[in-house]
Length: 231
Image 1 (cartoon, rainbow, N blue to C red):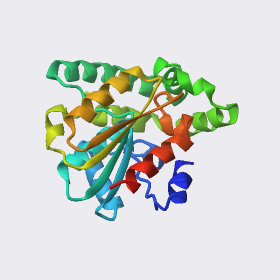
Image 2: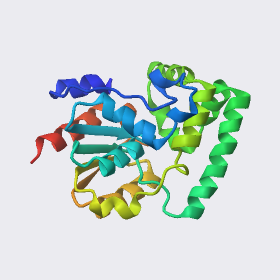
Image 3: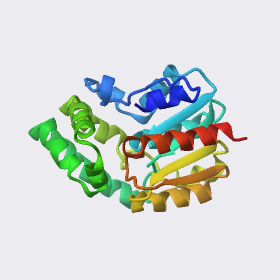
């Protein structure tokens, strides 16, 4: 568990699930599925100032939090995350695709969605994981609900959130960007982010894909430890 790894280096992690995920998977109130609601949930969960960590969608939301609350975030750690889609046409196109996917989740159920999700090329590197770990991850995904996942796509998907590309130069928070060497798409995004953010460093973890914390947890913890221990 990453939380155990963080505890081993002297951190005391507080976990905060996004709307529609994990402990919040049963959320059905549409009002919960907005950027403002997600940022408020993060703010309520933390004791500030502190370090903020986010993976994928969570990383995108964490970046929005750092932009909105610069005095609260001491250090920012983003894994396989992006500032969103740069153009309005890209965002509109993604919203259409996400709405189609949300409707399919509601119609076909979580089992079918998870089967398709785990078959995406983005997660192909997870095939290297031991069977018990893959089974545990699969079971975690199945605990989500149709309404939670569908509404999270509609309210917090890449197309739903505004782009932060133009805002990156103004974010002064020290930032660690972690990507896997097998995830070429997010390596390119990470390199662009590291150039645009004033105080960012990029770590590319060997042998890992999109889910670095799952595929190479030891390397993930080492990268975080080195980052928070540095000046």
